[in-house]
Length: 280
Picture 1 (cartoon, rainbow, N blue to C red):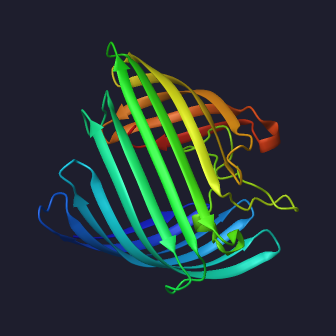
Picture 2: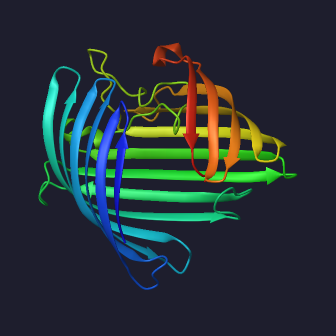
């Protein structure tokens, strides 16, 4: 199998290609070769990134999906008006994920667990020593067919002996549809002395949501999100609350939310968010 993907938006443009070789069993196991280019400019952080790598996917007998990877990333980036740099990293990675649900398109209950670990070392063709960890958990439960409860928790961290050597693609930013609604996309982050967002060492995000199905395939939602990208796990978190509507379309759920960021010091305010894709 082979494919070509592209993304065009005001904030990010990318193009990538991949070639996949099925293994045994072919429905779950494979080797994928990929390459791609991405340009991103968010707030005061701009970067251009070229990647080349491979992944080996293998489903364990326990149901967990194991992904072993090795990729090279070359990145040229600017943070604020002062920091301009380039990085070249050889990044081995290992990831484990498990999805349990009673429907692939619109489940009524289930959970997803995922952990990814990526590293780089100066002794192995890299410009920095980095250990990058990201953990994600999602849960869904439905009561009496109409009352749905969703929860999400995301934690990430970067260990390094010099954070200035870590490129933006491996730093953490929060805010937007997938993290904390009520704040601009990736606007939550530590700032430098000039007030420029620079990315954090840690990501902490939690969310709780209630949905009520008032008509078949249509649901009302109320939610609260809390999180931030920080340099210390005890730093303050930003809170967002809101309401929304969900439509279970033939291609999956579509979500429209109106959210308010409750922390003005973090740039909170009223925002409209649109997203699509499975709940888990």
